[in-house]
Amino acid sequence: MSVAPHAGTVIPLTAVDTRVSCQLCGSRVALSASFCPHCGVATAIPTDRKGRPVDRAATRSLQLAALVIVANIVVGALALGIVVVSSDAKNLITAALGLELLHFVVVGGLVAATISYGVRGIRETKDGRLGRRNWAVLSVVVASLVGLVLAVSLSATLAMFLAR
Image 1: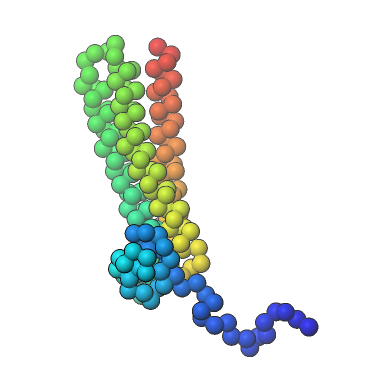
Image 2: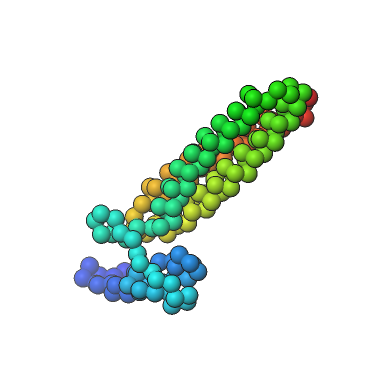
């Protein structure tokens, strides 16, 4: 006697999870539902060019990863400009530490949001029903690398400040 289904056994479609998370409240919503039963928000499911549903979190994580790179360039350039223009050599390390802290807070916050959305996107696309999983993975990798560079840069600046 075998407990495995026979080759001709049909598994009903209701056995497959056909639900996604509401973008507002996070409760599970059926793919076919027009509105979230918990909070009432419209639940239009975005699709790719082939008509497959895509994950909003994966898309948002890639957008935030691009913003992380742009913010890193802008804040880094502003910090470099202020250090170059600074005429007070005595307080240059203090100014550099302050700018590095600002850089860490601004870009670090974006890195944290990117990783959060990316992990959520990876989790929501794990069964293959939703697309753009690669986008979520890419955004987590990029944000993690930028976060690592930010932490090393802040540590080096802090070490310089303490060593003076």
